[in-house]
Length: 164
View 1 (cartoon, one colour):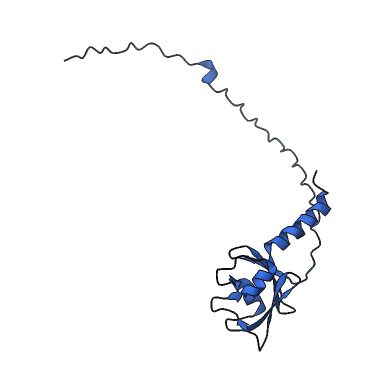
View 2 (cartoon, one colour; view 1 turned 90 degrees about the vertical axis):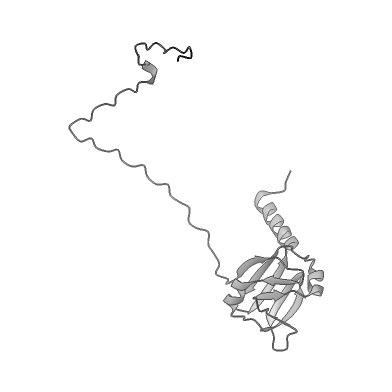
C-alpha cells in the first residue's frame, strides 16, 4: 500500500568549493631549522618581606562570643583548657595566657571574646574579625572589621591618592 510518497530524485552530487579544505604543502625532504624561541620576560624581584612572625586568621564570633582559631592556637601551642587573660587595648581585644585568667581556650579550640570586650571594640555576632597571633610574645590580638577597613582605606589613599 502506498501512502502517496514518492522517492526523491537523486541528482549528481557536487562539491561546494568553499567547503573543501586546501591541501597542506608537502614537507620538504631537507630538515628546516626551527625558529629561535622568544626570550622570557624578566620578572621583577619579589617585594622584601619582613619576617616579623605575625600569623593571621579571620573568624566570626558566634552568639556566645567564641571564635574558632585552631591554626593560630596550634602555632602558639595553646591547648584547650589553657587559662587566658582578656583585655581591650587601643580598640582591639588582647588575649594572653595567664595562670589566674578568668577565661580559657575552649574544647573545640575556640577563643572566648567576652561581651564587655566585644562591646567596647564594636564587634557584633557573626561580624568578621582579624586575628593576629604574635608567637614570640605569646599573644593574640583580635581586630574588629571596621578597624581593618579604616586601615586599608588609609593605605589605599596613600598609594592611589584621594578619590575624586
